[in-house]
Length: 219
Image (cartoon, rainbow, N blue to C red; front, side):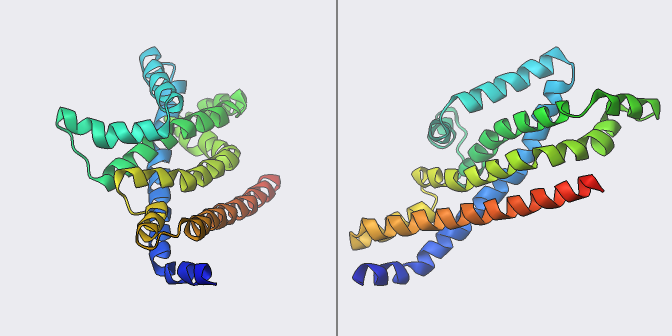
C-alpha cells in the first residue's frame, strides 16, 4: 500500500512529465514529416546530387544510435561553438531521426503509386510538383499512414532518451522522485504503464484511421 500511495502522490509530477513527453513526440513528428517529405522528394527527383545527399542523411541517421545522436547534438556541438538548449537539442535530434525513417516511408509510398497516375497528370498539363501535391501525394499519404503511425508510437518511447540531456520528461520526472524517495520499482513500473497507455491509445487511433481511409478509398 505504501508503494501505491507513493505512485499516487507522485501523480502530478508524472503527469507533468507525460505532457512534456507528448509535446516532444508531436513536435518531432510534425517537423519530422517536413524533413522526411523533403528527403523523399530529393530521393525521387532524378537529380543525382540531391539523391546522394538524401541517401547520406538517411544512412547516417538510421545507422547510428539515437542516444549517440543526442549526445552529439547536446554535448558535442558546443565544442565547435554551437550550444543548444536541452529542449532544442532534444526536439532537433528526434526530428532528424524520425525524418530519416519517414522519408523512406514516404518514398516507398510514392513509388507505390502506378506510373499511369503521373502520365495522366502530365497529359492534363500538371507540372511535376503539382502532380505530386494534388494527385500522387494524397494517395501516397494514405498508403503511408500505417508506417507513420508506427513512427509516432516509436517517438513516444524514444522521448525517454532526452532525459540524458536533463529534459524533465516522463522518465526523468520519475527519476527525480526516486532520488528523493529511494523507491525505484513502483515508479519505474508506473512509467512503463504510462508509456504503454500512450502507445496503446495511439495504436487504437491508428487502427480507426486506417479503417476510415480504407472505407473512403472504396467509394
